[in-house]
Amino acid sequence: MFFEKEGKTTDVWYYEHPPYPAGAKSYNKTKPIRIAEFEPEREWWDNRTETEQAWRVPVAEIIKNNYNLDIKNPNVEEVDLGNPEEILAQYESARAAADETRAELLSEIKGALE
Image 1 (spheres, rainbow, N blue to C red):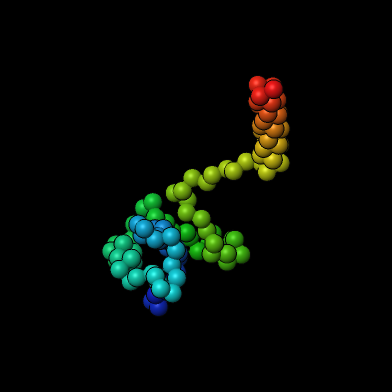
Image 2: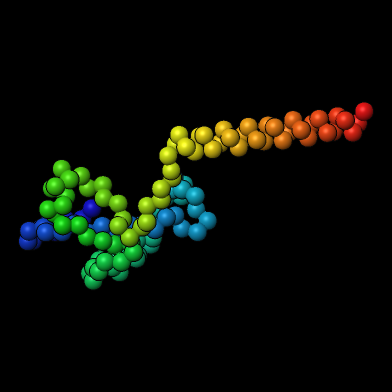
């Protein structure tokens, strides 16, 4: 987060840093984030415009949300993972069908070997 001393804050800018660079699965002590990875943010900073990675939120909205700064990127479509109970029911149904198929297959193999 960055703050400017001058003027009154009317909007808060967000910039979603891209995921790990190619070939990296995570950052750690031996493979820390490198300053060069912030180059896109540096280029954007002086000419801030809204993009797929950057958006602004009016301070009034943040105040309305009880100063919660955890605001999701509005440019990313939320994925509905579905109702957990419905997904579990579908899983149980698929598992029962697989168990039945396995039992039929085992019966056929035993019959063929007799």
